[in-house]
Amino acid sequence: MMKEMGKNDFIVSKTDTKGRITYVNKIFMTMADYTEEELLGKPHNIIRHPDMPKAVFKLLWDMIQNREEIFAYVLNKTKHGDEYWVYANVTPSLDAKGNIIGYYSVRRRPNDKALEIIKPLYKEMLEAEKSGGIKAGTKILTDLLNTKGASYNELIIHIQE
Image (cartoon, rainbow, N blue to C red):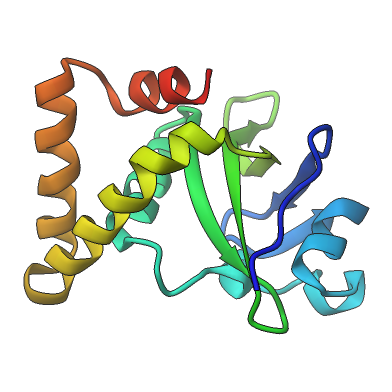
């Protein structure tokens, strides 16, 4: 079953530098069908959907570990196997000396028109990854960005508007 976020909902979570959940808000728990106790200390990928291209997560981790924020469309799965799409903004959390101490993510409902672009793109990336790994998925994405003359964040933000 496909779940949908409310128009004004925001899912918020924080993780440590290893991606283990340190904070979730009530909307996160409701959408993912988990309790706070089931989530805290667990890897954030507990909600990773198998239909998400690995290349998207590689890009996400590369950017946030480089102290950059990223915007991304992500398909998540619930504890009971349902799924839901989010438009995510992930940023590194820094201490006073500029060291990364964790990551902060805010997700909201994605634009339906954006998903019309993202779903076939992710399907193509997944197919490429089956035979050529993450590099093949990344190439599909890179080729699209080169065609559009945009960075990843520019494209994602543009189609969300």
